[in-house]
Image 1 (cartoon, rainbow, N blue to C red):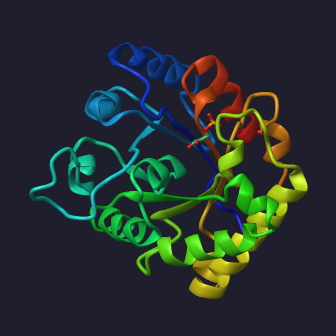
Image 2 (image 1 turned 90 degrees about the horizontal axis):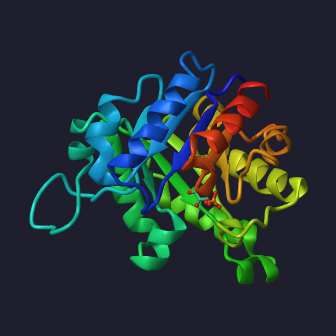
Image 3 (image 1 turned 180 degrees about the horizontal axis):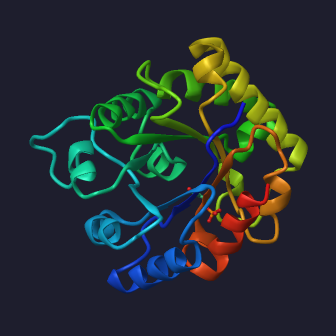
Length: 248
Ligand SMILES: O=C(CO)COP(=O)(O)O
């Protein structure tokens, strides 16, 4: 099974218009990539980024489940699509934590994203306490089952495994731990969606991915790319991660 490979950068709440120079520089370094490249800047930069990102696709970091209405401060999937972006990160642990987002809400948002023609990147991950209590696979199974809508296909959905304790900490799971969770997610997707779709949905690893560890992480069969935070902010850091994925 040849799955799409994806190097995705999540800028989180970082970047004013000056950061677009990094995007331009990254696009210049990868004019004809052999993997998909996606940058998710803050929503204030979506339109400008999409207009000048060349070979790099642009995504948002959240959307509302409704198409429009009285939801001050929120943006809809249709608005994201209208900006020129093609994807949206949903259910990131920082949103689950900072905004009390539930997996039910993530599923509604993913449905809205699909309806607007966006790729939904659905994030899952256990806390350190949950891992220590040997609950990782239960947590992942629950988040995956509830957060993923029935509208998921191999072309509109990506699942990202991001252990919370590995985000921004410099701590990375062992390769065995990554294999265990990614194989488990793959099995659950095939169980639910059948082999054609379940085997074709790309799975990303996220959490302290750096140029120094990317190649090793990309050796895992069910790792189809990465969702990168800190190391996606500078082209000089993200570029070697893209190259590692291209060479994997
Ligand atoms: O949360 C992440 C990407 O969504 C990972 O962040 P870091 O790469 O900074 O650990």
